[in-house]
Length: 604
Image (tube, rainbow, N blue to C red; front, side):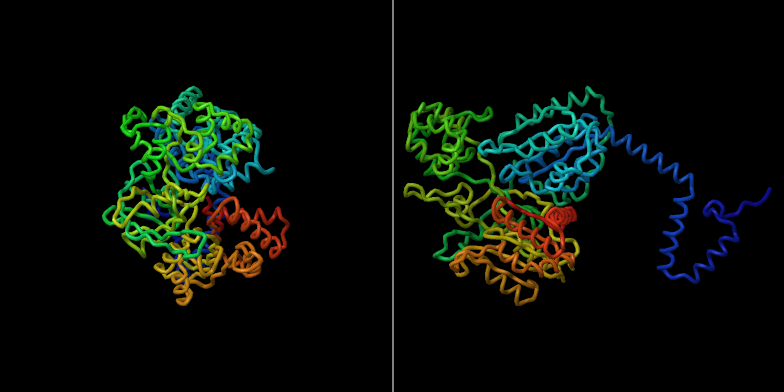
């Protein structure tokens, strides 16, 4: 018997071929080795029927698995949709269903035609618009390029706020369009208000029953995308907040400013809280005691009354202070109060939607009750109110810089109505009711769709007005700590240079240091003709285009319906003019930047 060649088990080559390879090894550079590797792999891929067969088998298996998997897409603005998507993913896994959980920002929407079971949990923001992370998916699904979805079974869980005219509009738009493309409703869309817990539980149970009926194959959950859920997940959450303490509460607008903006620092020593530039801080606030007492007096409710909230008995004072929204009026509150009081004026207002909308904007809850007081029961009163929800503020510090502190920049909401000052719930609480060392309930809301580029050499353009400057303070601190070499350009707008230049000394320090390459300012009221941030964007259009060609990342932070829309329109004009594109192609160009995470917005 012939002796076995010791190389046979390791290499599919003869000894002569191995000699030839060794000669090559002596003469080739590393680059040539890499090229040959790709070259021979290409030949093998083209000629090997064995590889082709394996490839086809893999494709069939992948298709088979995908057809039995339930894709859950989370499209979140403040974190609620993401939290429910996580819960649904866990619930279905516990019931032996294979799922794929993904953020709308990370979803490869061109693959939607291959989906068989799709669950979309989506919030609505601004004027009935989809959340920022779902914009690319939204534009694709609404376009002519969207594929037919005859094989798709889907369901939409829409989150919204019924006090807005376009309640759950983003969910409604997706539902309608997917249906137009041939998708079949696995379970009818559910439009959930801010108290969504009961709706979600019932919906998820019905969804599981229907999935069981169509006999989706059981298996374990597929891996989540690593960048969707950060490895810095805190033990603290929206419903299990940390207790921090106030370190600093400093007004950073001038004495004559029309705005009251506060720089607030909170202590997180020993809390094991981790955050990343771009994240938001959730703050649970309390209502003003004076406001609570005045409401109780107007409604002839005793402070000793006890009310029932989700099967828990608590005092009416505690309920109004900690559990209900008292600073914003809504259409639903007006309608409910009109039904209880049978007030003729309120009943008449209800008949005209435009008048009702204006009345709500101009009349805080306390004013309405003060104008039309009525003796009602404490339980009846809380039944007309909206639950209190935490406020989110962009974090304005980098943890590498401030370590055991979190900084936020808070614009105090102040309205003067009938001679009285009305403060916003959270901003009034943070600015007026808290003293140094007072406790505050907080949590981190991750925002993976507003992140610095991983490449510290990449240039960035940061655009914001008012407190929209806040996350850029964290960005610059982080770039400083990272020793980033990429260029940094800030566009900032506010009413007056002398009164409203937020963090002016810090920006000057970064400019002098050379870290901040350029800062372009727009002061709307410092001259006769108002100059806004979008005007400055157009003025520097050619230079911005040059930065874009240098792989710059663009960020926008601020009001969604005003500043952000105007700035985006200016960017589209720049792209169109400098890139020689029509408006359709410039839209496509900007959307491609969005897909590459080079165009990110944090809007509210």
